[in-house]
Image 1: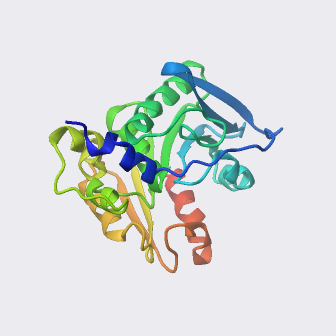
Image 2 (image 1 turned 135 degrees about the vertical axis):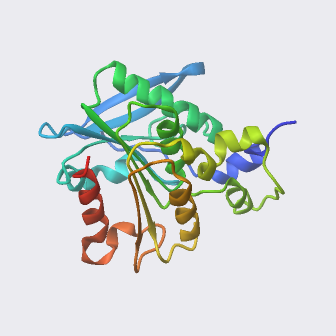
Length: 252
């Protein structure tokens, strides 16, 4: 029986790809990483020579690499070098995205960056919203990642399905092993920061708390930012978003 997570009905309603027709940034390095069946995954690095920390960032649904070009300097000010990847079918990446392939691609991306000495001596993996899935996938299976950040991430895959207008009563052992963030995160051992908006009505802050509580990390923190929801975390008052990241990056 085909898993609902591999069905066209689920994935076509989960992902919202956008093309990127903009020119490449002169201040960034572009990489096109080969995946099976002729697929190419686009990754952009914003160099920060003074940093020894790479921040591998998996963006949220409906977003593309180019959306973060004007934000790269803000991340550089935090002492990290931003490396951001597009999902299949997003931006300048080819192919059609599925949740399973997104997880598989995260390993292809990380291996390429490491094998080609693109990442720094330390690496933090960060996932926003849907990007929390590949972030947890990497951090729960690799020991060469120094830290993990989850922003507005989901926990249980059943609400993820139901938000697509589909019905699912339970998940199998295999499905949980692949797609259940709140279970997989128990294998994450590196320092962890979970960030969420108090007024997030798309993914409840309860899911952030569940991920935090289940995380296997000995060093972990949960920050529920007041006055912001799912897509405006950076607008939190008192610069809370970047201040929280700054404290975390300075701690490892």
